[in-house]
Picture (tube, protein in one colour):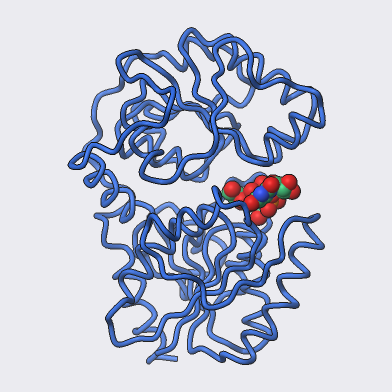
Length: 356
Ligand code: UD1
């Protein structure tokens, strides 16, 4: 079986790591196309190096642009590459413009297409990620769902017959890196003092970054938190804050560059709380047992809300009290799988490949 993974943005490089590892040395051929959606070293190369993912076989170098332009350019460039490669399976990941373009390019060439992280829904139709994930699920031939809730969504949309529950590959990589960090004591980034309580924050969703008034209010609320706030600044946030003339270096906020994965896991594991609009970070906080506050009105990961390990704060009201709430009791369930999702992905491709 020849499989091609299409990735383009930071969370996809992290999800690719356990999949590439599971394929390595096995009997299947696995190749990787990087669309170039994320091109900063800190958002891209660093993850390949650190997580031991072989360099991509193709880099389309598409870069930034409006949604239509970025998606269209990736689609156009992929068509040529996929025509040449003609793999048995095309694997697309998550909910970015690279995901949608990858699924479209593949199905139009009648290539079997699998969507990893299928079935997630925010039910917020204004989010670009929601457009991408719904359209990708309806286009793909095989839907690899990370959670039981995702499977339910797919059944409700009439896609149950193409669905397989495989678990969450993000848990695979998190467990591996968490254990490595615990044994080799990965140093914390410069300026982080774990002798004092601190909060880790990230903001990058268009709904939070692209509206001047909302971004100002959000930065003000973070600046007023009663603990130091390590804000890992995504390029989208930095670009919008600059354009709006909003300083990120105010009050409790300590702006920092985006971190490599091991350093991120180390810094989150030692934090008092996480404040974020990232999907991945909500789960990482949950799995590392750090209380999380999500700066949105909804989440694709409702499992994290159990016992208030994650609390939605889309209107930023009472943020200091919510962020510094007491640690909830531990949760016994393992809603994101046991760390072996990547192997289940390969098994599902084998099963559906031979059946098709
Ligand atoms: C994208 C995904 C989102 C994912 C996120 C993870 C879409 C619609 N969104 O959002 O689902 O959660 O990645 O980070 O696909 N930029 C740089 N350097 C880079 C990449 C981006 O400076 O390496 C800047 C550019 O100004 C660009 C902006 O960030 O315009 C936004 O980048 P974009 O590719 O639209 O996606 P993200 O906001 O990162």
